Length: 388
Image 1 (tube, rainbow, N blue to C red):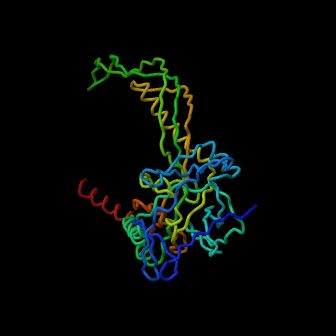
Image 2: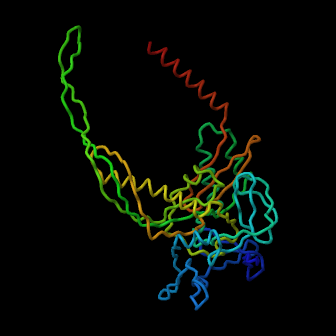
Image 3: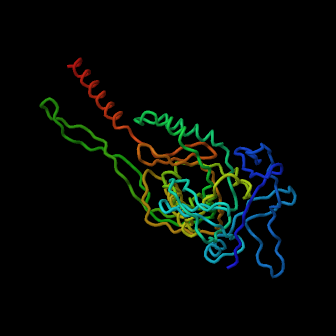
């Protein structure tokens, strides 16, 4: 197989050192001499379709009137075929694979060994190349490493029962790594037929006998009843950018805590945005991501059905959904991540590179927990002493 792995280098025009993308700006900076170079629009046009030349790359379109690249959705069936067999939106990349958490991080030819940015496990690069669907879009980093570190320190400082000195330890001990994490987005139009039952609550008065102060008496009680009747109908919904993680390197509670993302700031993928950062390759196949997106859609459709049935309560017997106009995008989202060791144990955390939301694992101080328990018992004893 022909090696089509692309290597992207961004030398400084003044000194030749490597440029890196500056978070929050559309520019690249040289850490050696300080030269700043803007990220230009480049030639983002999709190749025009020529006779017998195969289909045009559907990942990019060119707005000739405004001279700006626009994101375009890729038909799902086209993408499923490419993910299996390769094609016009697939490229080859060299990756390292973490034996501990399963992350796959893209590398260029200057790297031969590294540590996993998610769990700090030492890893060695694969010797071969992997074919994957190219990213169509990237959400550039907005937070700098210093801003992400402050968000992390504030989060650690707000933890209850954390060991003393943990914040200072994390501040001085760990460098944060900027990683573009892969996600799938899915669009679809849905039409669903359902059958079920609508429940309307009504009340009946029941007379009961109760004893009060040794005397019996009859009292009225209102008892709730539900009147059920059959319900059938149809609902329709258009889904836009249903977001699904394309990697299992981070637990679901981490990726879920990073939400929400403002995808209105997605930019057409350019290697410039990745300069100075790492990019994780997807390990969740497009078909599996589509299955997860369908599960999300099913939960939304169920809510639509319940609202359409109406009433006070609903029973759903069946929902039959049809989907069309299904499309997808492969996008990269910015995450600052670090794994640090404290008292012989490893902990990791991630910071949303756009919003600053933090999620992480944390150590607990057994002494602080025990002290709090003792203090609570003392306080309870004092209260009981003065109230008896």
